Structures are given as C-alpha cells and as structure tokens.
Image (tube, rainbow, N blue to C red; front, side):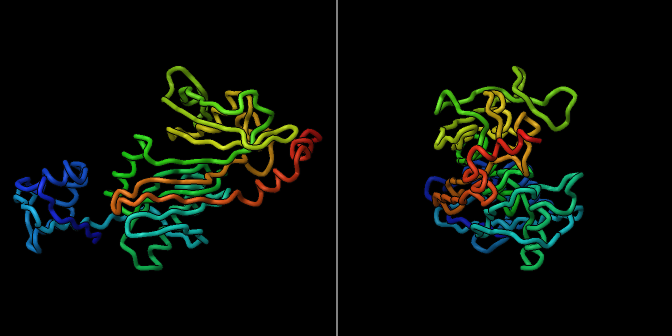
Length: 303
C-alpha cells in the first residue's frame, strides 16, 4: 500500500479526520471512499481509526491508500528516459513517435505500458496517471502521478495554471507579431474524431508565443500554454497562418513529424512543497531542421 503521513498542526486541533482530509489535504469523496471501503487504512498515533475520530495538535495521522489495479493494461518493456522520480511522481523525457497513453492504434506501446513494466520490474505498487499528456509526435517532458491522490492534486494545479509548460516549435513563415497571445476557443472539427479547430463554442484555450530565431521560410518560437486542450499549439499556430513544420494535419508541409518539443516543465510539488524545474534540450531531429535552414522547406516543395 501507499502510505501518507502528517503531523497535525495547531490550526486543525479539534477537527475530525474526515474534515481534515477534505479541507486541508484536498481528499475527494472518491478517494476517501476508496480508503474506507477498498482496503485502505486510517491510523491515528498508530491506532486504527475511522474518519469520525477527533484529531489534536501533534497527533500523527497516516493514510494507507489501497493499491490500484491495471488489469486491462499490458506492461511492455521499453527504454524510458526518466528525468526525475520520487514516491509521488515521475518525469519522463518522451521521444517523438511514442504515444503517451494506450489507444486503438497504440494498445501496448505507449509510455503508460512502459512505466507499468518499469514498476513491475522494480516491484513498485504504483499505477500510471498521465498529468501532462503529449501528442504521439510531440517530444519532451511528460509528468506522471504514481497514485490517485497525487494525481488529483496535480490535476487541480493544471486546471488553475500552476503547472507551467514551455515548448519549442518550428513554424512555417515569418511572424508579423514577434510576441503575442492567442486566446481562441478550440473544439472538435465537424466530421472528424481527431482534428480540432478554433470555434466559438469550443473550450477556452490560451497560448503565449515569442519568436526566438528566424530563417528564410520558417521561424523558431518559444511557447507557453495556460490551458491544455487537445492539439492546442498546433491548432492555434495554424489559425494564425503559421502551421508547425511537418504538421500535415493542420496545413504544414509534411516531414518526419511535426516540430514541437516540450522543453520545460515547472511546478510546486504538492507533497514536498519544493518548486521543481525540469528542462529538456531540443532533440536532434529538430536541430537538424534548424541547421538545414531554408532547405528544410524547399525539399518539400519539390515533391
């Protein structure tokens, strides 16, 4: 089981355990229900208790979360570039061409399958909750929660913009505005289960960008997103008229993959309260495009 422990502070003296977990530790009803009925344990000063027990200043409260099973997911051994790991999270530097989560097209070859195999090999009692999902062809930093409680905390942080993700992209053309914000809602394109588009009835989506380098025919830009909509960067840049190089779905000229890399991930760790910053260098295939200069786009024009 996964064990969480706290020492009760003076401000929480007199609360019930249930009140403390909900108000102070942001336990959802679903997680609390799992602890109570699915094999979890509540201990106060090493004695088993219920959520109705009263806590006092200085008490030691421990919660054992029941193990989550992933019977429908198959562990698949694969190389994983693990940037950081502790008892709550894993940060992985994902390669382009690898799916974040299993799907009909990638049932056994996703990062989730690989991390499950890693857990199995290490004898770790965790499951995989992807927090910052990346498209198959997007490379870079990927945040994973090891259990449902940390996932619920990180999901709330993501919804409120407290997980910062910065990307490096190569887009076609030379932008008139070298720095700006795209605040346009995104929704599913009619008649497609994959493609998205800017539409008035879509979900709120905000993308900040800044040009850092220009070459004849394309630009290298840094991007920070406030929201995490499906294909957000790809849709927003195409909407401006500067699709990602290689993004044939949204108007870019076709190459090996769309040129997008999650280069920085930063957030306040909800358990340790330490601010973490992770960085990933631009991968070699994107560096090759940058070095090729205008030849990167000219080679496609001849096809």
